Length: 272
Image 1 (tube, rainbow, N blue to C red):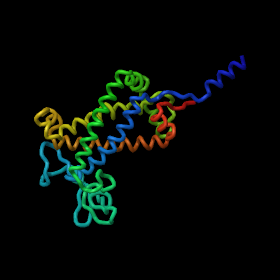
Image 2: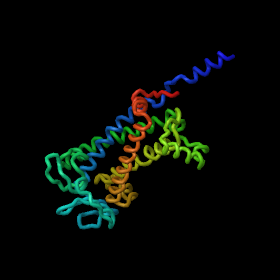
Image 3: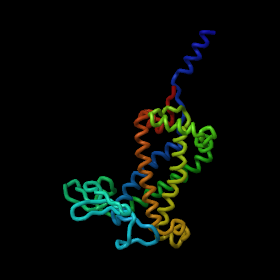
């Protein structure tokens, strides 16, 4: 009996290689990472052409913008409503690789292309928008058909209890990330919010800014309250996605980059 117990304990203590990410998830993750990277950088170059955001249907230099990144003769600034912050050297007024002062919203290292070229930025943006949108659609279809959503992302009553929610938040604050083979509550919630809410909204607000949508889907522009409102929502969501990516990368580093990145490449992760 004692030997059997020791053998059982040895088997249960051995590291186990578990399939964590299916092939469809891994393919979408890496293609989406490339697409989002290009879309964010080319989007910042497009924003540089008119670094102001408005609510409503129309927006021009003489209209009141709720957000503006600009510069005067000596300083760069970010203005939101009536509040203004000095951003010299980062936004609005900065030095390029040759040391020359530039007066554009976002610096050259954050945009694609790095030199001002609105036409090329739009080509990059629209080309990778197709990869992004079709990849998301394919992933959603596959995630529902193979049971990924029902199996891995459904929230249980136990998980939604206040004590469970606080426990998961507390574990993350204490940098305790080993929750086993299943997604924890915060992973599920962020997954659902980003993949099934923010990313589709990003696509539809992008469509609403297209002049061709006036004729094809005029109701889409009305839903967002006008093309300029759609542009503002598009920019806000893009900023949220950029923030999510930053937090995601930080958590990967803190929780073990070799296991995390390796799992997204091979699909399998090791658990003890």
